[in-house]
Image (cartoon, rainbow, N blue to C red; front, top):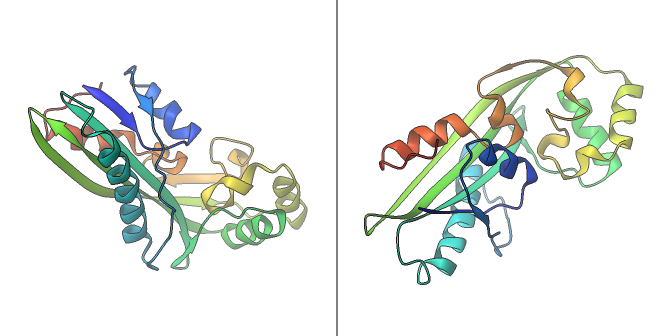
Length: 196
C-alpha cells in the first residue's frame, strides 16, 4: 500500500519512521484556519482538510490501494487554543500561561484512501494532559530565546529543550509530540491495514 503523509512536520515524519514503513510526504496546499473555539473540533477539521486536499490531488494517479494521513495538533489551556507563537514575546506569554499547571494537547488525525477498491475515511482526535512545573521568569525568557517554541503548538517542544519542565504526562506521549501512533495503528486495523 502506498502511504502518503500530508504533513511537513519533522516530528510526525520521525514518529511514522519508527514503524519501519516506507511513505512519501506531500503537504497540503490549503491555508490552515481554525474556525472553532473547540480544540477537538478544530484539530479534526484541520487534519481532515489536509488529508482531503492531498487525497484529491493523488486519487487519479494511484492505481492500487493507498493511504493518506493528515494530522494537526493544538494546545489548549483554560479552554483557549494556543497556536504557534511565532515570536519571542508571544512564546513568553504562552509559556507563562502553562507554567505550574495542567494543560491539554489535542491531535486530530484523518486517515483516508482506498482499500480493496473502496474509498475509506476515519477522523478522530486524541487528548493528552501535560503538567508543567513552576518556571521562573528567567527560565521562561531563556527558553523563549532559544527560538525552539516559535513553530510549536503551545510554544514548546516536549521532546526538546522544554523537557526538564514537564512534570508528567497523562496519556499518549507521542500525541504531545504531534502524532498519536498507537491510536492511529488501532484505527487502521479496522480497515485491515497493518502498518507495524
